[in-house]
Amino acid sequence: MKGNMRWLRLLLFIPLLVVLCGTNYYEDPANIFHDYSKDIANAVLNGEEAYFGSGNGDERNVKMHMIKGMPKQVDCITLGPSLSMGIRKQNVGTESYYNLSASGLNFNEFMADIALLEVNNIKYDRVIYCVDSYFFDETFATRKINAALEPYTEYMMKILDGEEAAAPEESGGMEVIKTQLEQAFSITYLQSSFDFIRSNESILLKEKRWGIIDETTKDLAHYVSDGSWVYAIDIRDNTVEDVINHANSYNIERQFAYDRHLSEYYKDYFRKLIQYLLDKGISVEFYLCPLCPTLWERVEADSSHYFMLNEIENFVKEMADDYSIKITGSYNPYNVGITDADFWDSRHVRHDRLDSFFDFKE
Image (spheres, rainbow, N blue to C red):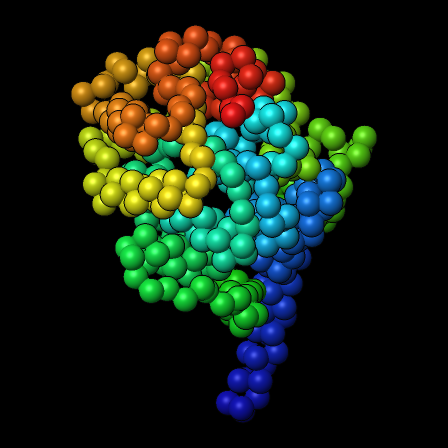
């Protein structure tokens, strides 16, 4: 009798497992089972415009595959967070250009990208680096990153410390399979799948998981052929009132390091990295993306607690003086002459206004 009950419980449990794994696999809000990053990167490298159609696309994987497939010699690259994702080849003045920025790019990821470029023997004459607080705030700088990038960060830090370092080997598929198995049976991922269903208002996917931009999809957020980013139409249609509302609700305590100073540890590595790039004959330029005026005034009103941005700007200017590095922009919008109307939200300058306020040309 007891044996029959065990079999009965098992038979009841199996359908639950099937629903759990099936839902996580099909909905896949983080594209763990359906990672089309390489396809998107290849499309971009082939001169096409491509989009993620469902879930959260892995920007870091896209840029990693772009680096692996890039021409071996390019004139210019851009690295930074989402603030610099809209800088295009027209802005920098060369066709030989790739934007390798990714949302929230932090210290570890920046190092990994430099290492990836080196390991893949990519030569570039100039790098535009968008300097943001992510690089110097330990809260963000130490945030766990894409597992595939971690060996590259460690490699680059050893190089900068003058240590012998072997180039990271391509990671095999076992780590990917392990992650997929964990997430297939994950209750947490199931909750994310349910959240994705609610936001999609449907169990069935409404869009392809990725695709090439055409007349029917041009309003979606997407990459263009130099790797830069075009925001979705709802963001492109934001008004100045939307910008002001976003600025007034923005979490400045989290973003701008309440009562925290620059990390000396990361300042030291930043100096080492810039010296390393310059020694290789690479021209370095700094881009300081301003806050919109409404957001800046919120930060300035409590400046006794928010000093990170001013510390970064002073440090960058000191570095620029020491190494004869060009700077464009300032965190203070009044130094640039930019208004709330020139932004899509409180942090991101409208891409069509970049040339009006910043000089990215050599």
